[in-house]
Length: 55
Image (cartoon, rainbow, N blue to C red; front, side, top):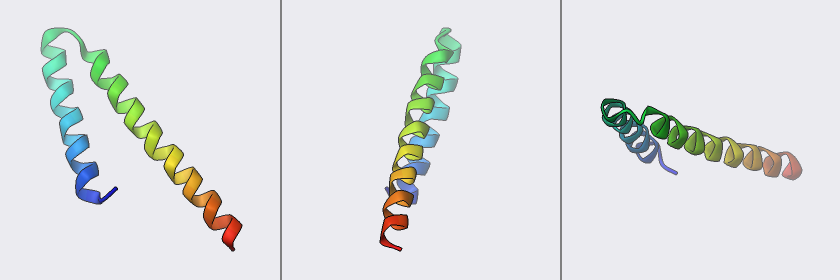
């Protein structure tokens, strides 16, 4: 993903957090953030493993 896409997603998660906290569903926004950050982590681990195999 491009950097601007990450920024858009993070800003959306912040807005969701603010909105959901007002409604009393703050854990939903944190769950979405956790899923997003876990996906990024897994992609980076896979990318680093591929680079290690090539070297």
